[in-house]
Length: 466
Image 1: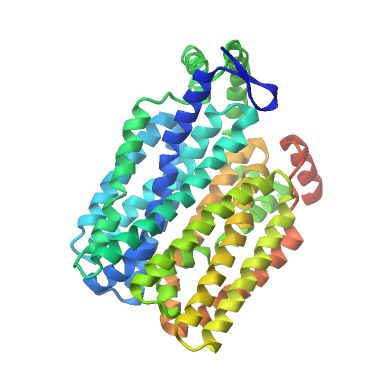
Image 2: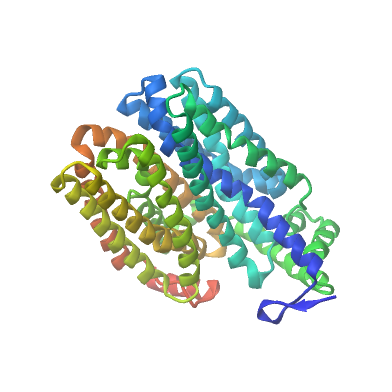
């Protein structure tokens, strides 16, 4: 039995179910990404009390994961090319499990920082391996929707972390070591990811790249309608040949001035996404709300609103990507986030400490995240996947991802140090100044990419930047 789905493509119910199952299982990597980056938000105040963290070591505990993620993102692509996407995700599930257990039982700050770095290797690896795997198992007409489900799982993981933190903090907040229970919950999706991926197939595109065309056809028959698998295998053979050409891109290509400028634009887009200060809110939101006037328990609960708006805004952002041009979305997001940060800084100075100021700051952080997750974040990842020519797409994206994670690391490390030195209002004014620079950069240098084939876009960028 067949039925007609989107774009007039016929699918069988069993192949459709199989593809949905693959998507759900693989995106547990995105859920772990979100949970492990978000859980520190509520756990950090309890770590600070138990381990005696200073402002610097507080930033180090948070940012050590991000430094590991930068290394994990760089290494995973090469390893996945050699060993396979599925095998790489299985390995990442083990690293998630080992890193989580290590963090949960860490006896002191040094061990905690080391285990957070290990956990970061898995987070960075998942940021590369999971979208790649999903893109390669998805049919062309559904690729965008299936791949962006990973972004939804990331913000859903952060919401889950905020919710678990609130429940555990409110129930057992006075118990020593309560932060360990917040962290250890991540072992459950790690085990689920490993067990689930054991039953999932390898990427047919990776199999074809290794000349295993029979295995690739067998996988395609599991996830494509009758008659489509054979036709797609011919396309996969061609794509495998093109990928071999793409792998030749590297530093030598930067001798071309237009490619150097293009990589600089990509790096700028990556930095722009991070210097909004979004991760100061995702990592330190509970402390920001406590400083604004909430009690510790109330701040944990109120922080859930940040997770809820992130999930809702991501849905909106995915919808808008199909309707609106990328560049105006990015500019709108930058103006919105910069304005919200300016108001946070102003009201932190002008309003007296208390519940009134607390709710104003909460409303502004929610507004900030609506612009960030609804415009800036989805446009960033999409544009970075579009702007580079085929020959250096993997290389260019990898360089930009490395810079993005390192910028994220700098924000995570320096935020508590800056708050300790110049208070939260002064820290947000720094983000406002950076936001003005980001708006100028986007308006002047970032190209429009919507509505163009990748080949046409390559020709346009070559002509514009030469």
